Image (tube, rainbow over the protein chains, first blue to last red):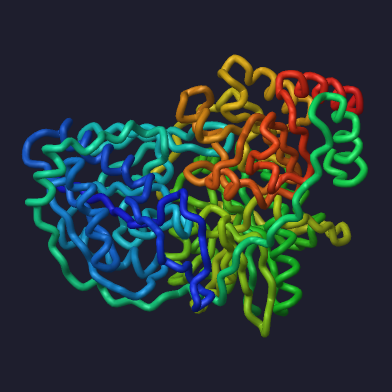
Length: 250
Length: 322
Protein backbone atom coordinates (compact mmCIF):
# COMPACT_ATOMS: atom_id res chain seq x y z
CA UNK A 1 0.00 0.00 0.00
CA UNK A 2 1.08 3.55 -0.65
CA UNK A 3 0.81 5.90 2.30
CA UNK A 4 1.19 9.70 2.13
CA UNK A 5 2.06 12.11 4.91
CA UNK A 6 1.50 15.83 4.41
CA UNK A 7 4.16 17.81 6.26
CA UNK A 8 4.42 21.51 6.91
CA UNK A 9 7.38 23.72 7.74
CA UNK A 10 6.51 26.09 10.61
CA UNK A 11 8.14 28.53 13.05
CA UNK A 12 9.37 26.90 16.25
CA UNK A 13 6.72 27.24 18.98
CA UNK A 14 9.19 29.24 21.10
CA UNK A 15 9.22 31.98 18.44
CA UNK A 16 8.38 35.50 19.51
CA UNK A 17 6.25 36.81 16.65
CA UNK A 18 7.09 40.11 14.96
CA UNK A 19 4.79 41.52 12.29
CA UNK A 20 6.35 41.90 8.83
CA UNK A 21 6.56 45.19 6.92
CA UNK A 22 3.59 44.16 4.74
CA UNK A 23 1.47 44.05 7.96
CA UNK A 24 -0.06 40.84 6.60
CA UNK A 25 2.44 38.18 7.64
CA UNK A 26 5.20 37.66 10.18
CA UNK A 27 8.74 38.94 9.90
CA UNK A 28 10.67 35.73 9.18
CA UNK A 29 14.09 37.13 10.14
CA UNK A 30 15.69 35.23 12.99
CA UNK A 31 12.88 32.66 13.05
CA UNK A 32 13.85 28.98 13.33
CA UNK A 33 11.63 26.69 11.30
CA UNK A 34 10.80 23.11 12.30
CA UNK A 35 8.62 20.24 11.17
CA UNK A 36 5.10 20.97 12.41
CA UNK A 37 4.91 19.16 15.80
CA UNK A 38 1.64 17.35 14.95
CA UNK A 39 3.18 16.07 11.70
CA UNK A 40 5.66 14.03 13.74
CA UNK A 41 2.72 11.99 15.09
CA UNK A 42 1.51 11.58 11.50
CA UNK A 43 4.95 10.34 10.37
CA UNK A 44 5.16 7.90 13.29
CA UNK A 45 1.70 6.46 12.62
CA UNK A 46 2.46 6.06 8.91
CA UNK A 47 5.72 4.24 9.69
CA UNK A 48 4.02 2.01 12.28
CA UNK A 49 1.32 1.16 9.75
CA UNK A 50 3.92 0.34 7.11
CA UNK A 51 5.81 -1.90 9.55
CA UNK A 52 2.61 -3.72 10.43
CA UNK A 53 1.56 -4.19 6.82
CA UNK A 54 5.02 -5.36 5.76
CA UNK A 55 5.47 -6.24 2.11
CA UNK A 56 6.17 -3.49 -0.33
CA UNK A 57 4.36 -0.59 1.34
CA UNK A 58 5.80 2.82 0.58
CA UNK A 59 5.57 6.01 2.61
CA UNK A 60 5.82 9.44 0.95
CA UNK A 61 6.25 12.79 2.70
CA UNK A 62 4.72 15.64 0.69
CA UNK A 63 5.10 19.33 1.39
CA UNK A 64 3.90 22.46 -0.41
CA UNK A 65 6.11 25.55 -0.34
CA UNK A 66 9.58 26.89 -1.06
CA UNK A 67 13.01 25.24 -1.04
CA UNK A 68 13.38 25.57 2.75
CA UNK A 69 10.56 23.03 3.19
CA UNK A 70 13.12 20.41 2.16
CA UNK A 71 14.56 20.61 5.70
CA UNK A 72 11.24 19.36 7.05
CA UNK A 73 10.95 16.69 4.35
CA UNK A 74 14.50 15.54 5.29
CA UNK A 75 13.42 15.27 8.91
CA UNK A 76 10.61 12.89 7.85
CA UNK A 77 13.04 10.94 5.66
CA UNK A 78 15.43 10.63 8.60
CA UNK A 79 12.63 9.16 10.70
CA UNK A 80 12.18 6.44 8.06
CA UNK A 81 9.92 7.80 5.31
CA UNK A 82 10.83 6.34 1.88
CA UNK A 83 10.47 9.28 -0.48
CA UNK A 84 10.05 13.03 -0.28
CA UNK A 85 8.11 15.26 -2.66
CA UNK A 86 8.24 19.05 -2.70
CA UNK A 87 5.38 20.75 -4.51
CA UNK A 88 6.98 24.08 -5.21
CA UNK A 89 5.37 27.44 -4.82
CA UNK A 90 7.07 30.43 -3.24
CA UNK A 91 3.82 32.38 -2.95
CA UNK A 92 1.59 32.36 0.10
CA UNK A 93 -1.27 29.89 -0.35
CA UNK A 94 -4.35 29.50 1.82
CA UNK A 95 -5.44 26.08 3.10
CA UNK A 96 -7.45 25.39 -0.05
CA UNK A 97 -4.51 26.22 -2.30
CA UNK A 98 -2.26 23.87 -0.32
CA UNK A 99 -4.92 21.16 -0.26
CA UNK A 100 -5.46 21.27 -4.05
CA UNK A 101 -1.75 20.64 -4.65
CA UNK A 102 -1.62 17.85 -2.06
CA UNK A 103 -4.78 16.17 -3.35
CA UNK A 104 -3.48 16.15 -6.95
CA UNK A 105 -0.20 14.57 -5.90
CA UNK A 106 -1.84 11.98 -3.63
CA UNK A 107 -4.12 11.03 -6.51
CA UNK A 108 -1.31 10.64 -9.02
CA UNK A 109 0.75 8.58 -6.55
CA UNK A 110 -2.28 6.42 -5.80
CA UNK A 111 -2.02 6.66 -2.00
CA UNK A 112 -4.98 5.06 -0.25
CA UNK A 113 -4.08 6.19 3.23
CA UNK A 114 -3.04 9.73 4.14
CA UNK A 115 -1.81 11.05 7.46
CA UNK A 116 -1.58 14.76 8.34
CA UNK A 117 -0.95 16.63 11.57
CA UNK A 118 -4.29 17.80 12.98
CA UNK A 119 -3.20 21.39 12.47
CA UNK A 120 -0.15 23.44 11.57
CA UNK A 121 1.01 25.57 14.46
CA UNK A 122 1.35 28.65 12.27
CA UNK A 123 -2.11 29.49 10.92
CA UNK A 124 -3.83 26.97 13.22
CA UNK A 125 -6.60 26.33 10.70
CA UNK A 126 -6.86 22.62 11.33
CA UNK A 127 -8.70 22.02 8.03
CA UNK A 128 -6.26 20.79 5.36
CA UNK A 129 -6.72 17.06 5.99
CA UNK A 130 -10.49 17.35 5.77
CA UNK A 131 -10.31 19.44 2.57
CA UNK A 132 -7.91 16.98 0.91
CA UNK A 133 -10.25 14.11 1.83
CA UNK A 134 -13.31 15.84 0.44
CA UNK A 135 -11.50 16.80 -2.79
CA UNK A 136 -10.44 13.19 -3.29
CA UNK A 137 -13.74 11.68 -2.16
CA UNK A 138 -11.87 9.90 0.67
CA UNK A 139 -13.23 9.25 4.14
CA UNK A 140 -11.75 11.42 6.85
CA UNK A 141 -11.18 11.17 10.59
CA UNK A 142 -9.66 14.29 12.11
CA UNK A 143 -7.94 14.70 15.52
CA UNK A 144 -7.19 11.03 16.06
CA UNK A 145 -5.61 9.66 19.27
CA UNK A 146 -5.96 5.95 18.46
CA UNK A 147 -5.78 4.29 15.03
CA UNK A 148 -6.37 0.70 13.92
CA UNK A 149 -6.37 -0.67 10.39
CA UNK A 150 -7.64 -4.17 9.67
CA UNK A 151 -7.87 -4.99 5.98
CA UNK A 152 -9.87 -2.12 4.57
CA UNK A 153 -11.50 -1.15 7.82
CA UNK A 154 -10.38 1.72 10.03
CA UNK A 155 -11.40 2.09 13.66
CA UNK A 156 -10.13 5.29 15.22
CA UNK A 157 -10.70 7.29 18.35
CA UNK A 158 -11.04 11.00 17.84
CA UNK A 159 -10.84 13.61 20.56
CA UNK A 160 -14.01 15.60 21.16
CA UNK A 161 -15.11 17.93 23.98
CA UNK A 162 -15.32 15.87 27.14
CA UNK A 163 -14.34 12.52 25.62
CA UNK A 164 -13.60 10.53 22.51
CA UNK A 165 -15.67 9.36 19.59
CA UNK A 166 -15.01 5.87 18.26
CA UNK A 167 -15.30 6.21 14.49
CA UNK A 168 -15.49 3.45 11.89
CA UNK A 169 -14.78 3.93 8.24
CA UNK A 170 -12.94 2.39 5.31
CA UNK A 171 -10.02 3.08 3.04
CA UNK A 172 -9.27 5.24 1.17
CA UNK A 173 -9.04 7.73 4.01
CA UNK A 174 -7.31 10.76 5.49
CA UNK A 175 -6.47 10.67 9.20
CA UNK A 176 -5.23 13.74 11.09
CA UNK A 177 -2.98 13.12 14.08
CA UNK A 178 -3.41 14.59 17.56
CA UNK A 179 -0.81 14.57 20.31
CA UNK A 180 -1.25 11.33 22.25
CA UNK A 181 -1.62 9.14 19.15
CA UNK A 182 1.89 7.72 19.62
CA UNK A 183 5.42 8.61 20.70
CA UNK A 184 7.26 9.81 17.57
CA UNK A 185 10.61 8.04 17.11
CA UNK A 186 13.84 9.97 17.10
CA UNK A 187 15.78 9.98 13.86
CA UNK A 188 18.75 7.65 14.36
CA UNK A 189 22.20 8.61 13.12
CA UNK A 190 21.81 5.93 10.47
CA UNK A 191 18.45 7.42 9.53
CA UNK A 192 19.93 10.90 9.24
CA UNK A 193 22.77 9.61 7.06
CA UNK A 194 20.48 7.63 4.77
CA UNK A 195 18.06 10.57 4.51
CA UNK A 196 20.85 12.51 2.83
CA UNK A 197 20.93 9.92 0.08
CA UNK A 198 17.17 9.70 -0.42
CA UNK A 199 15.76 11.78 -3.24
CA UNK A 200 13.35 14.64 -2.81
CA UNK A 201 11.55 15.06 -6.11
CA UNK A 202 10.46 18.56 -6.97
CA UNK A 203 7.57 19.64 -9.14
CA UNK A 204 5.45 22.77 -9.44
CA UNK A 205 2.37 22.81 -7.21
CA UNK A 206 -0.99 22.81 -9.00
CA UNK A 207 -1.93 26.42 -9.71
CA UNK A 208 -4.66 27.78 -7.47
CA UNK A 209 -6.34 31.00 -6.42
CA UNK A 210 -6.78 31.80 -2.76
CA UNK A 211 -10.28 32.09 -1.30
CA UNK A 212 -8.90 33.83 1.74
CA UNK A 213 -7.55 37.37 1.71
CA UNK A 214 -5.57 38.65 4.68
CA UNK A 215 -6.37 42.31 5.33
CA UNK A 216 -3.92 42.83 8.15
CA UNK A 217 -2.02 41.12 10.94
CA UNK A 218 -1.51 42.57 14.39
CA UNK A 219 -0.08 41.61 17.73
CA UNK A 220 -2.66 41.17 20.48
CA UNK A 221 -3.29 44.36 22.46
CA UNK A 222 -0.74 44.47 25.26
CA UNK A 223 -2.20 44.13 28.72
CA UNK A 224 -1.70 46.56 31.57
CA UNK A 225 0.48 44.86 34.15
CA UNK A 226 -1.76 43.42 36.83
CA UNK A 227 -1.81 43.93 40.55
CA UNK A 228 0.06 41.71 42.97
CA UNK A 229 -2.33 41.60 45.90
CA UNK A 230 -0.05 39.93 48.41
CA UNK A 231 2.37 37.14 49.17
CA UNK A 232 0.16 34.70 51.10
CA UNK A 233 -3.42 33.66 51.81
CA UNK A 234 -4.18 36.94 53.59
CA UNK A 235 -4.65 38.35 50.06
CA UNK A 236 -7.44 35.87 49.27
CA UNK A 237 -10.41 37.95 50.58
CA UNK A 238 -9.32 40.91 48.46
CA UNK A 239 -8.88 38.66 45.41
CA UNK A 240 -12.37 37.21 45.81
CA UNK A 241 -13.83 40.69 46.30
CA UNK A 242 -12.17 41.95 43.10
CA UNK A 243 -13.35 38.92 41.12
CA UNK A 244 -16.92 39.53 42.31
CA UNK A 245 -17.15 43.30 42.24
CA UNK A 246 -14.63 44.54 39.69
CA UNK A 247 -14.29 41.67 37.23
CA UNK A 248 -17.79 40.30 37.94
CA UNK A 249 -16.74 36.84 36.81
CA UNK A 250 -17.80 34.80 39.85
CA UNK B 1 -36.13 33.51 -2.86
CA UNK B 2 -33.84 35.75 -0.88
CA UNK B 3 -30.34 34.64 -0.07
CA UNK B 4 -29.83 33.24 3.37
CA UNK B 5 -27.47 32.99 6.27
CA UNK B 6 -27.64 29.62 7.97
CA UNK B 7 -26.67 29.07 11.60
CA UNK B 8 -25.64 25.43 11.69
CA UNK B 9 -26.55 24.18 15.15
CA UNK B 10 -24.75 21.39 16.96
CA UNK B 11 -26.46 18.79 19.08
CA UNK B 12 -24.93 16.08 21.21
CA UNK B 13 -27.12 13.25 22.42
CA UNK B 14 -30.23 15.14 21.40
CA UNK B 15 -29.45 18.47 23.10
CA UNK B 16 -28.30 21.66 21.43
CA UNK B 17 -24.96 22.91 22.67
CA UNK B 18 -24.46 26.43 24.02
CA UNK B 19 -22.24 27.41 21.10
CA UNK B 20 -25.26 26.84 18.83
CA UNK B 21 -27.02 29.77 20.48
CA UNK B 22 -23.91 31.89 20.02
CA UNK B 23 -23.91 30.94 16.31
CA UNK B 24 -27.62 31.75 16.05
CA UNK B 25 -27.12 35.16 17.70
CA UNK B 26 -24.31 36.27 15.43
CA UNK B 27 -26.11 34.90 12.35
CA UNK B 28 -29.18 36.98 13.23
CA UNK B 29 -27.01 40.07 13.72
CA UNK B 30 -25.14 39.61 10.40
CA UNK B 31 -28.38 38.89 8.54
CA UNK B 32 -29.79 42.23 9.71
CA UNK B 33 -26.70 44.13 8.61
CA UNK B 34 -26.53 42.37 5.25
CA UNK B 35 -30.33 42.34 4.64
CA UNK B 36 -30.43 38.56 4.33
CA UNK B 37 -32.84 35.96 5.65
CA UNK B 38 -31.67 33.78 8.48
CA UNK B 39 -32.47 30.18 9.37
CA UNK B 40 -31.09 27.69 11.84
CA UNK B 41 -30.26 24.21 10.55
CA UNK B 42 -29.55 21.11 12.57
CA UNK B 43 -28.95 17.49 11.66
CA UNK B 44 -29.90 14.91 14.26
CA UNK B 45 -32.39 12.39 15.55
CA UNK B 46 -34.80 13.64 18.26
CA UNK B 47 -33.69 16.96 19.76
CA UNK B 48 -35.19 18.01 23.08
CA UNK B 49 -34.43 21.75 23.21
CA UNK B 50 -34.82 22.86 19.62
CA UNK B 51 -37.38 25.54 20.55
CA UNK B 52 -34.80 27.29 22.73
CA UNK B 53 -33.14 28.74 19.65
CA UNK B 54 -36.24 30.98 19.17
CA UNK B 55 -35.00 33.20 21.99
CA UNK B 56 -32.08 34.34 19.91
CA UNK B 57 -34.15 35.81 17.11
CA UNK B 58 -34.46 32.72 14.93
CA UNK B 59 -37.92 32.30 13.38
CA UNK B 60 -37.31 29.17 11.33
CA UNK B 61 -35.46 26.01 12.21
CA UNK B 62 -34.79 23.24 9.69
CA UNK B 63 -34.39 19.86 11.37
CA UNK B 64 -32.71 17.37 9.02
CA UNK B 65 -33.85 14.23 10.72
CA UNK B 66 -32.87 10.58 10.64
CA UNK B 67 -32.70 8.06 13.47
CA UNK B 68 -29.13 7.18 12.40
CA UNK B 69 -28.17 10.80 13.15
CA UNK B 70 -28.26 10.16 16.91
CA UNK B 71 -24.48 9.94 16.71
CA UNK B 72 -22.37 12.04 14.41
CA UNK B 73 -21.55 10.81 10.92
CA UNK B 74 -19.04 12.94 9.06
CA UNK B 75 -20.19 11.73 5.64
CA UNK B 76 -23.91 11.75 6.47
CA UNK B 77 -24.07 15.16 8.12
CA UNK B 78 -21.83 16.77 5.47
CA UNK B 79 -23.94 15.52 2.59
CA UNK B 80 -27.28 16.36 4.24
CA UNK B 81 -26.33 19.86 5.37
CA UNK B 82 -24.55 20.80 2.13
CA UNK B 83 -27.56 19.63 0.10
CA UNK B 84 -29.81 21.84 2.18
CA UNK B 85 -27.42 24.81 1.92
CA UNK B 86 -27.46 24.48 -1.87
CA UNK B 87 -31.21 24.14 -2.27
CA UNK B 88 -31.90 27.06 0.08
CA UNK B 89 -29.54 29.54 -1.65
CA UNK B 90 -27.35 29.93 1.41
CA UNK B 91 -24.58 32.49 0.95
CA UNK B 92 -23.14 32.30 4.43
CA UNK B 93 -22.88 29.56 7.09
CA UNK B 94 -21.98 30.10 10.75
CA UNK B 95 -20.90 27.11 12.83
CA UNK B 96 -19.35 26.70 16.30
CA UNK B 97 -15.63 25.97 16.28
CA UNK B 98 -15.87 22.66 18.12
CA UNK B 99 -14.80 19.14 17.19
CA UNK B 100 -18.05 18.96 15.19
CA UNK B 101 -17.42 22.28 13.41
CA UNK B 102 -13.81 21.38 12.79
CA UNK B 103 -14.79 18.11 11.13
CA UNK B 104 -17.72 19.28 9.04
CA UNK B 105 -16.88 22.84 7.99
CA UNK B 106 -13.92 22.21 5.65
CA UNK B 107 -15.88 19.41 4.01
CA UNK B 108 -18.99 21.62 3.60
CA UNK B 109 -16.78 24.34 2.14
CA UNK B 110 -15.44 21.99 -0.56
CA UNK B 111 -18.96 20.83 -1.41
CA UNK B 112 -20.16 24.45 -1.64
CA UNK B 113 -17.07 25.55 -3.59
CA UNK B 114 -16.38 28.12 -0.91
CA UNK B 115 -13.59 29.14 1.40
CA UNK B 116 -13.89 28.96 5.15
CA UNK B 117 -12.44 30.94 8.03
CA UNK B 118 -12.25 29.04 11.28
CA UNK B 119 -11.96 29.95 14.96
CA UNK B 120 -13.18 33.53 14.49
CA UNK B 121 -13.24 35.75 17.58
CA UNK B 122 -15.02 38.60 15.81
CA UNK B 123 -17.23 38.95 12.74
CA UNK B 124 -18.21 42.38 11.48
CA UNK B 125 -19.65 43.89 8.33
CA UNK B 126 -17.58 46.50 6.52
CA UNK B 127 -18.78 47.89 3.16
CA UNK B 128 -21.16 44.98 2.77
CA UNK B 129 -18.53 42.32 3.41
CA UNK B 130 -18.03 40.06 6.39
CA UNK B 131 -14.63 40.65 7.97
CA UNK B 132 -13.37 38.02 10.38
CA UNK B 133 -10.76 38.36 13.10
CA UNK B 134 -8.97 35.20 14.20
CA UNK B 135 -5.86 34.25 16.15
CA UNK B 136 -2.80 32.79 14.41
CA UNK B 137 0.34 31.31 16.00
CA UNK B 138 -1.86 30.17 18.91
CA UNK B 139 -2.82 33.76 19.72
CA UNK B 140 0.61 35.37 19.42
CA UNK B 141 -0.92 37.44 16.59
CA UNK B 142 -4.35 38.14 15.10
CA UNK B 143 -5.36 38.49 11.44
CA UNK B 144 -8.30 40.23 9.85
CA UNK B 145 -9.43 38.18 6.88
CA UNK B 146 -12.20 37.98 4.32
CA UNK B 147 -13.37 35.41 1.81
CA UNK B 148 -13.54 35.97 -1.93
CA UNK B 149 -15.76 32.96 -2.64
CA UNK B 150 -19.48 33.31 -3.42
CA UNK B 151 -20.48 31.26 -0.40
CA UNK B 152 -18.73 32.05 2.87
CA UNK B 153 -18.35 29.74 5.84
CA UNK B 154 -17.17 30.80 9.30
CA UNK B 155 -16.66 28.99 12.58
CA UNK B 156 -16.84 30.93 15.83
CA UNK B 157 -14.81 30.24 18.94
CA UNK B 158 -17.05 29.11 21.82
CA UNK B 159 -17.65 31.56 24.70
CA UNK B 160 -16.49 34.60 22.75
CA UNK B 161 -19.63 35.73 20.92
CA UNK B 162 -22.40 37.09 23.11
CA UNK B 163 -25.77 35.40 23.02
CA UNK B 164 -28.38 38.05 22.42
CA UNK B 165 -31.98 37.36 23.19
CA UNK B 166 -34.21 39.29 20.82
CA UNK B 167 -37.90 39.02 21.62
CA UNK B 168 -39.49 35.66 22.18
CA UNK B 169 -40.31 34.56 18.69
CA UNK B 170 -41.78 31.14 18.50
CA UNK B 171 -39.75 29.55 15.77
CA UNK B 172 -41.38 27.30 13.20
CA UNK B 173 -39.67 23.95 13.17
CA UNK B 174 -39.65 22.29 9.81
CA UNK B 175 -38.72 18.63 9.89
CA UNK B 176 -37.17 17.15 6.78
CA UNK B 177 -36.84 13.38 6.98
CA UNK B 178 -33.58 12.29 5.40
CA UNK B 179 -33.79 8.90 3.76
CA UNK B 180 -30.78 6.57 3.59
CA UNK B 181 -28.02 9.00 4.57
CA UNK B 182 -24.43 8.27 3.58
CA UNK B 183 -22.93 6.52 6.62
CA UNK B 184 -19.54 5.61 5.11
CA UNK B 185 -17.93 7.21 8.13
CA UNK B 186 -19.78 7.12 11.43
CA UNK B 187 -19.41 7.32 15.18
CA UNK B 188 -20.16 3.93 16.73
CA UNK B 189 -19.72 4.92 20.37
CA UNK B 190 -18.57 7.72 22.66
CA UNK B 191 -16.12 7.29 25.52
CA UNK B 192 -16.69 10.04 28.04
CA UNK B 193 -13.75 11.29 30.05
CA UNK B 194 -14.05 11.60 33.83
CA UNK B 195 -13.59 15.37 33.93
CA UNK B 196 -16.87 17.22 33.89
CA UNK B 197 -15.97 20.15 31.71
CA UNK B 198 -13.72 20.59 28.71
CA UNK B 199 -11.20 23.45 28.71
CA UNK B 200 -12.19 24.44 25.17
CA UNK B 201 -15.76 25.15 26.25
CA UNK B 202 -15.47 26.21 29.87
CA UNK B 203 -16.24 29.72 31.06
CA UNK B 204 -13.80 29.39 33.97
CA UNK B 205 -10.56 27.39 33.91
CA UNK B 206 -8.26 26.54 36.83
CA UNK B 207 -4.88 25.39 35.51
CA UNK B 208 -1.90 23.85 37.24
CA UNK B 209 1.75 23.76 36.25
CA UNK B 210 5.01 22.36 37.45
CA UNK B 211 4.71 24.41 40.65
CA UNK B 212 2.14 21.82 41.78
CA UNK B 213 5.15 19.57 42.40
CA UNK B 214 3.38 16.28 41.60
CA UNK B 215 0.19 14.76 40.13
CA UNK B 216 -1.18 13.98 43.62
CA UNK B 217 -1.37 17.71 44.42
CA UNK B 218 -3.80 18.38 41.56
CA UNK B 219 -6.55 17.55 44.06
CA UNK B 220 -6.09 21.20 45.14
CA UNK B 221 -6.72 22.36 41.55
CA UNK B 222 -9.72 20.04 41.19
CA UNK B 223 -11.26 21.27 44.47
CA UNK B 224 -10.99 24.90 43.42
CA UNK B 225 -12.34 24.04 39.95
CA UNK B 226 -15.30 22.22 41.57
CA UNK B 227 -16.05 25.18 43.82
CA UNK B 228 -15.99 27.57 40.82
CA UNK B 229 -17.78 25.24 38.40
CA UNK B 230 -14.62 25.38 36.30
CA UNK B 231 -12.69 23.04 34.02
CA UNK B 232 -9.22 21.81 34.98
CA UNK B 233 -6.38 22.87 32.68
CA UNK B 234 -2.68 22.05 32.63
CA UNK B 235 0.59 23.38 31.30
CA UNK B 236 2.57 21.47 28.69
CA UNK B 237 5.26 20.60 31.25
CA UNK B 238 2.86 18.62 33.44
CA UNK B 239 1.20 16.93 30.45
CA UNK B 240 4.58 15.86 29.06
CA UNK B 241 5.50 14.59 32.53
CA UNK B 242 2.38 12.42 32.43
CA UNK B 243 0.71 14.12 35.43
CA UNK B 244 -2.34 15.19 33.45
CA UNK B 245 -4.01 14.05 30.18
CA UNK B 246 -3.29 15.93 26.96
CA UNK B 247 -6.90 17.02 26.57
CA UNK B 248 -6.33 19.43 29.48
CA UNK B 249 -3.26 21.10 27.93
CA UNK B 250 -3.59 24.84 27.35
CA UNK B 251 -1.28 26.64 24.93
CA UNK B 252 0.42 26.02 21.59
CA UNK B 253 0.25 22.23 20.89
CA UNK B 254 -2.68 22.20 23.30
CA UNK B 255 -5.84 24.25 23.32
CA UNK B 256 -6.13 28.00 22.83
CA UNK B 257 -8.78 29.26 25.22
CA UNK B 258 -10.66 32.49 26.00
CA UNK B 259 -12.69 31.94 29.18
CA UNK B 260 -14.07 34.74 31.37
CA UNK B 261 -11.69 33.73 34.14
CA UNK B 262 -8.39 31.84 33.97
CA UNK B 263 -6.67 30.92 37.24
CA UNK B 264 -3.02 29.90 36.69
CA UNK B 265 -1.56 28.01 39.65
CA UNK B 266 2.14 27.24 39.80
CA UNK B 267 2.52 28.11 36.11
CA UNK B 268 5.51 30.29 35.28
CA UNK B 269 4.18 31.26 31.84
CA UNK B 270 6.23 29.89 28.93
CA UNK B 271 5.57 31.77 25.68
CA UNK B 272 3.57 28.81 24.29
CA UNK B 273 1.32 28.84 27.36
CA UNK B 274 0.81 32.61 27.38
CA UNK B 275 -0.16 32.52 23.70
CA UNK B 276 -2.90 30.00 24.45
CA UNK B 277 -4.58 31.79 27.36
CA UNK B 278 -3.75 35.50 27.33
CA UNK B 279 -6.98 36.42 25.55
CA UNK B 280 -8.94 35.26 28.62
CA UNK B 281 -11.08 38.13 29.97
CA UNK B 282 -9.59 37.97 33.48
CA UNK B 283 -6.45 36.18 34.58
CA UNK B 284 -5.41 35.34 38.12
CA UNK B 285 -1.88 34.08 38.74
CA UNK B 286 -0.70 32.35 41.90
CA UNK B 287 3.01 31.61 41.85
CA UNK B 288 5.77 31.92 44.41
CA UNK B 289 8.17 33.60 41.93
CA UNK B 290 7.07 37.24 41.69
CA UNK B 291 9.15 37.65 38.50
CA UNK B 292 7.41 34.80 36.64
CA UNK B 293 6.19 35.90 33.16
CA UNK B 294 2.64 34.81 34.03
CA UNK B 295 2.29 37.96 36.17
CA UNK B 296 2.82 40.10 33.05
CA UNK B 297 -0.55 38.95 31.65
CA UNK B 298 -2.40 38.52 34.97
CA UNK B 299 -4.98 41.03 36.17
CA UNK B 300 -4.59 39.91 39.77
CA UNK B 301 -1.76 37.97 41.32
CA UNK B 302 -0.64 36.49 44.60
CA UNK B 303 3.11 35.92 44.73
CA UNK B 304 3.17 33.21 47.35
CA UNK B 305 3.02 29.55 48.26
CA UNK B 306 0.38 27.78 46.22
CA UNK B 307 -0.09 25.06 48.86
CA UNK B 308 -0.95 27.62 51.52
CA UNK B 309 -3.12 29.84 49.28
CA UNK B 310 -5.24 27.39 47.26
CA UNK B 311 -7.12 25.74 50.18
CA UNK B 312 -8.03 29.16 51.61
CA UNK B 313 -9.19 30.39 48.20
CA UNK B 314 -11.31 27.27 47.69
CA UNK B 315 -12.97 27.72 51.11
CA UNK B 316 -13.65 31.39 50.40
CA UNK B 317 -15.28 30.56 47.04
CA UNK B 318 -17.40 27.83 48.63
CA UNK B 319 -18.60 30.37 51.24
CA UNK B 320 -19.82 32.89 48.68
CA UNK B 321 -21.39 30.20 46.49
CA UNK B 322 -23.40 28.67 49.32
